[in-house]
Amino acid sequence: MKIGVFGGSFDPIHNGHLRIAENAFAEAGLDSLLFMPVYMQPFKIGKTMCAPARRLEMLRLALQGKPEFSVTGVELRERGVSYTIHSLRTIRAQSPADAEIYFLLGADMLLMLEKWKLAAELLREFSFIVAARPGSDSVEPFAAYLSDTYGTRILHMKNELLDVSSSDIREKVRQGKKIRGLVPKAVEEYIYENGMYKDA
Image (cartoon, rainbow, N blue to C red):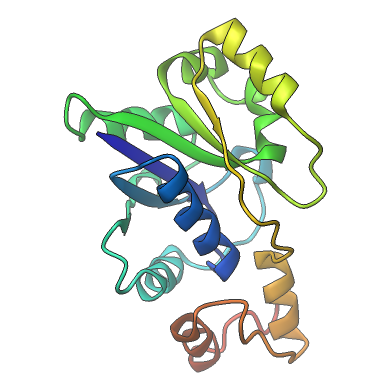
């Protein structure tokens, strides 16, 4: 069994996230994919995020009708700095014994992996799916180094490069600009109905 884990703020979740998840699911032959919203990222301590309940609701709305995708609140329950190694170990403990856990991340983040908490253990214990990102050069030489050094299994996606980000969406809402087509319709309606990101 192959289980994918897609971590992030998802503030808000957008169509780029969904496209990457769909590509990863197909290309890696995953059996399921978990969206894992972060409570607090170690490299972004002090950054203000939308309340966890709102981010969870936007995820729920975005994933309606997609039974292959679900949400895990493993990092939100900790209510502190989220470390990927701890979260993935928790997910592995809750999964079937034969499950292989794949962490989905962007090419830019792959280059930083050795700086993460317990990086050597993370790289030895889990597999990774790497999505191409706008502005990211080829990371295959570095991925090969990680595989040779730690025995890490790394799959490279051939995903379309979409220039959309949550920060841009928040700024558009703040400026009163349209976000149609950038987020699922249900998420767009939720943002406007709840007056979100007006002061982003």
